[in-house]
Image (cartoon, rainbow, N blue to C red; front, side):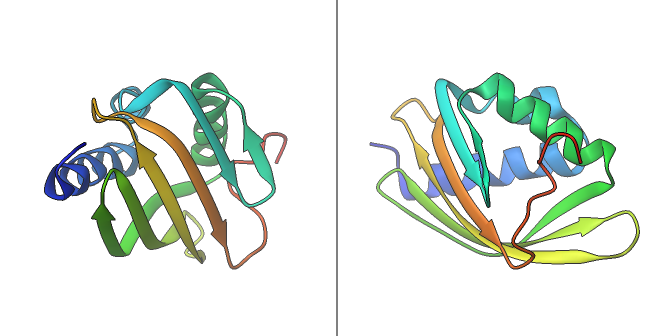
Amino acid sequence: MLDDAEVLKIWAELNAAFNRGDIDAFMAYMADDFTAMASDVFMASAAEFRAAAVNGRNNGWTEQHMTSVSAHNNLLTARYFNIFADGSRTEGAGIALFDDRGKIVSIRALNNSGATPMKLGS
């Protein structure tokens, strides 16, 4: 099991990578068997998650700012707001499960807009 401080460190690193637009560094933290659910969008693989993250960035999603993060026993919870190029933002919350190697196995998140910037085709 990972130390709680290590889970928080990994989360800070991957969030910083996303915010600077480094999707390769961001995705390096995802496990091979990774799955995600963001609002109404299920992503069955790391490849689908990557495509959705790139789509969100291409549609003006510039940053995810953490407002509260906690970790215990390989599980992390986060409250955040997504920032968009047009100045708008949405608030959300999520949970991430880490494996013992420090890779993220699963993410589940919801935001107050009822949608996600990761939806393909948007």
